[in-house]
Amino acid sequence: MFQMPIIANLYFFFRYCPRQSDNTSKIEVRQRVAGSRLWLKPALTICCTLSLLGLLPVLAACGQTALRTSLVGNWIATNGVVKFADDGTLQSCFTNKSEVWAFEGTWLVRSNMLIMTTLKSNGVPRGVPRVDVGEFKIVRVNNDHLTYSMNGQTMTFVRKNSTALEKANELKLSTVKFDGLSLEVVITMLHDESVKRDPDRKGITISLAPNAKQLADAEIKLELKDVTLAETLERVGDSVGLKLQSTDAELLLVK
Figure (cartoon, helix red, strand yellow):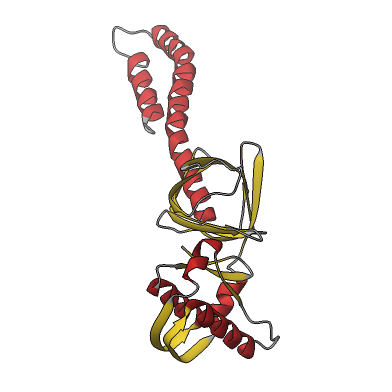
């Protein structure tokens, strides 16, 4: 495709610019050269245009790849977090004062649209229709900010890891042993431990999501060594069928 202008040059040269022979006068040669010039410019224009048109899908694909790369990572909103993994999976968690919504699924970018498919969730906020496949227009994305919109509603995120989860990953526990304690008591103990180790004495907020409150009395039998607080909570959650999710300021065990 990209050699078409060269081919056109060669074609018109040999077609209209023959070498002078005994039967061809200099005037005839000049006339043929002049005629070739009339055809050569539009022919080259067409060939170059076709070459550029062939490049457009390549350039578009490169743009979509760059856009996808920009989206990979953790994004924090005022009431939740969403994580776009490089393997095309996503996890998100949003909360208000009384409810928590956790989602898992897949994501991809197509024609500057962010397409998210929900494979698992614990429900949706009141008044919000359930959408298993959502197409969101990407308004802006850079190293620090992500904005997308759908049906006139706009969501804005900043790129950062959950502060609560980062603290939980830094907090090391040499020995953990729970011998039949209730889940609610275990959560309280782990929160108290985070307060003791926090120079500001604020600790990490750890909660049961509203849809997991019925498991507050579940017995936890677990013994671990040399783990982080985050790893401990993951193992505690696994033992009763819950998953660890996080917002910027809180760790949640959700069903």
